[in-house]
Amino acid sequence: MPRDNRTPSSDAPVYTGPERLQKVLAAAGVGSRRACEDLIFRRRVTVNGRVAQLGDKVDPATAVIHVDGQRLQADNRLVYLAMNKPRGVVSTMADEKGRTALADFLGNRVEQRVYHVGRLDADSEGLLLLTNDGTLAHRLMHPSYGVQKTYLCEVAGPIPRNLGKRLAAGIELEDGPVTVDGFRVVDSLGRTAQVELSLHEGRKHIVRRLLAEVGHPVSRLVRTAIGPIRLGDLRAGRTRRLTNAEVAGLFKAVGD
Image (tube, rainbow, N blue to C red; front, side, top):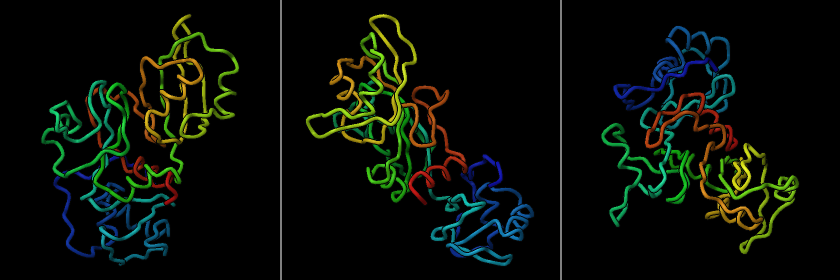
């Protein structure tokens, strides 16, 4: 897929029915209409599993479009955001108890109503995804799709050399066993250490419970990645729109 990181702007066209494919591709940020026509001519675009042809019309709300094998979300009514949730904020869009919630950080910047994908407890921080794409959100959260999540944790040290092997072999918790996909010690400062671990589990407080079970309770937890989406240098309390390539990466992570 062309390396165009643009996302549709708020004044992008609102489709009311089928439109020429090159117009839809251009509006989704793939490139100019002429460049999109060239992609179609070179058979690099498929629509609903069929190689597209010049002159094809599509409905962006229902068409499944791939460019160079990567899924393109052409429906500009759909919103995909990354957020760095601060510590002390509850993972709900609004809170009936009046606590600071996710919507408090969006203001008027997002016109569409979005929902959070998964949760982080109030004491945890880091990456959350916000979207109004219910199908993708469901797949990202469902354990059968095995989307990996990565966490940076500050824990009680020191860390024994065999801890990674123990976690990879599996640890039995009260609600069943859990294994990690990856583990490494980032830093060790005597009684405190920083560790990074990746797993595809989604059970409540799974990382905290896992590390407490092996004798290393967590004092700080930051989620740094969900599938191909990384927190990067996004500041606490800020959001950013995902690029076309990042959205395509999420679809790929759930097998679409």
